[in-house]
Length: 110
Image (cartoon, rainbow, N blue to C red; front, side, top):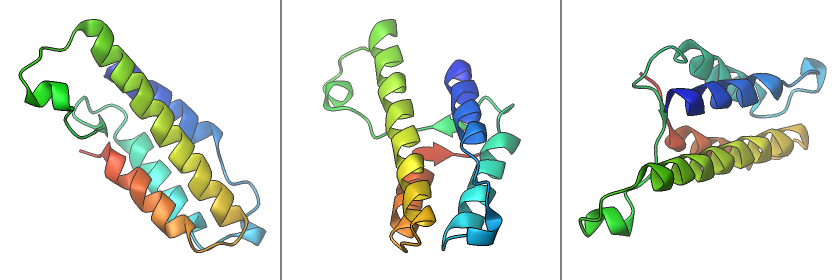
């Protein structure tokens, strides 16, 4: 989980909105969310979270590989959702609010 958080922070840090003169409707919220992610990077309880799988509900025990695969998929989904929110924001679309909300629900700050 700690490595996933480092990747998350690196991704969030590298995708920076550079032109604040053309700020979109979500620019401030995106920047604040990314700042919150960076601030919680040292906390082992902070990070991405997803709903429990059907297999877990049936009592199936995860393997280290399946846990790693799930974390990788979640990281990819989160990164894609943040990229979508940023793209919509740059286009001036207010639907960036919904895209950012989805990303926020995927991340648990502590």
